[in-house]
Length: 186
Image 1 (cartoon, rainbow, N blue to C red):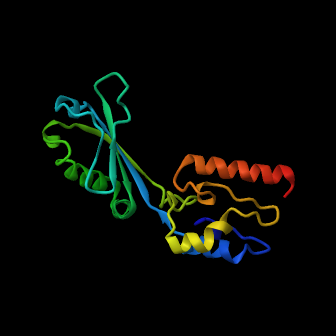
Image 2: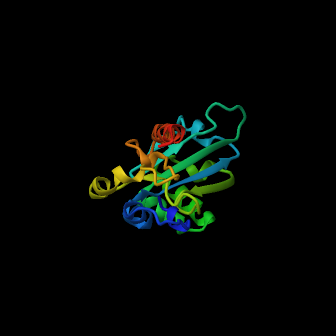
Image 3: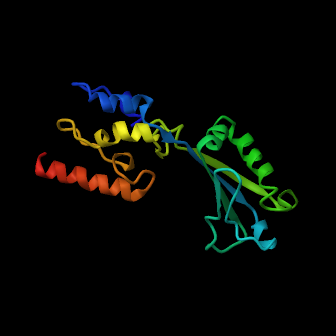
């Protein structure tokens, strides 16, 4: 929905879709930071590289099933913490996370050789504007039933147009609905 207001529609979309695309239907912020280390220092500490913190954050070890000494750790941040990290440069954001991780991975600075890092923010992506639909109860009550409704020959699908916000099955369910509508000429 956040990107619909970047597209010129004639005729104009319904009032409910315009309201939702103009910020009236909240989306969650989410950012992932990937860090490649020369060695999997966490394993020498008896840790598996997976965890949760006191932030809305998950730590993943995407290379858990790969051979070799190198390893990746990924910080998967949500909501306000993702927004805060998005405001930092990539280098400062990585350093910020490493400073926090001293509580998660004891001795992190004694053992690391960070080779590379990169991040991805769904809020900063031009054609997503957010990670998943996260409307308030009032927004959901007022707009949810309108978001997936076709307008003429334009059909709407995605997790935001389903009851499964934030999940792939929501995108699939709404995609099947839209495909059926198109096929049946509704």
